[in-house]
Length: 244
Image (cartoon, rainbow, N blue to C red; front, side, top):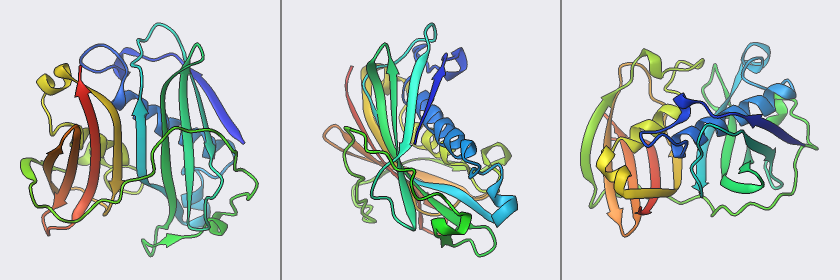
């Protein structure tokens, strides 16, 4: 099953340069995953109450080829990839305009039992087994992040607030995108073009918790970590950026 949607970008989706790029596309990715699951009655609008279970995103990887203005619609497609397991699924995304690919990505999703706070299998929500689609996707495999913090530089600390929370009462996954992107100032984004961005969610963060952001540059790659007060990794990211 392939879920499709046409969307006219809005001014609120654009970045400082007036174009829709990484942050806007991640929001669209989240929207498409959400709408896909809602369309088969297996979304977070129903399964927490019906099964006591919620979807959580554990990883995203997104390639950005073109930024979009908000004058013409974008066509978006998402699907479950073959090879998904009992414990997790991978979903692909492609964003087009006039048949030109503007962005494409992959996400990994799991199910969490709201009482035990532990992962559970797809059978727990009776997810149909015949949904996977074979589609071409030019996205590299997910990165294996190290816990070694040698060479990282501290940038800033952020406290989780009310507007960062979602239905599960922990910090919603899209807020971490902003958190890691804020490791750099506007001058960086004026002189660099982000070509891809990957994020891995390690531990949940709740209201009042502090997250310290660290960065390490290796060539055109920037490794980004969000560290909790107890020293555990909340989130790890990898951004690739070239001179604009």
